[in-house]
Length: 158
Image 1 (cartoon, helix red, strand yellow):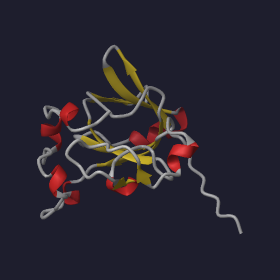
Image 2: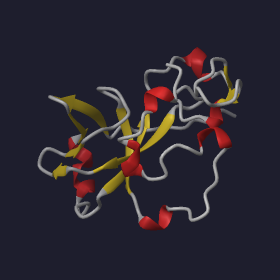
Image 3: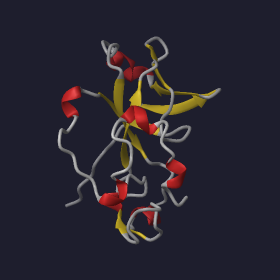
Image 4: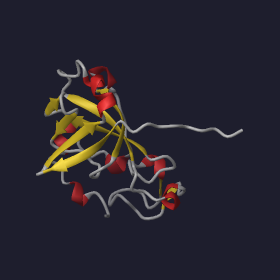
């Protein structure tokens, strides 16, 4: 028996003149109704730039984090190179243009034309009070807003 999973692209990530936005296909735009008031959204997207051979690797061969372990499993990273490159990013909502089906944000960590699979409002109840992380990444920002000013270039080997 073959297990088939079907995903529907609802829109794409775009950037114009330094502005990032998600533009929904017309048939999904009514899903934006009453989204105003949420300052942040979780964007579920497809890591379409990763090749099939890269997706099959469960152990990351190159050390991605400068202060991280020598070997690391793909599930201990946020890399798009995964068995199923379904990725989640939290974004700040700058503006919503309901007529054009666009959600504007200062930044999203995906490329131009990236397929968007779903959008979910970020709720305060999703925060974890006593979250722990490995020693090698404990110095990373604790809050989303602080991550914009963190020196990420000194964390990654790419």
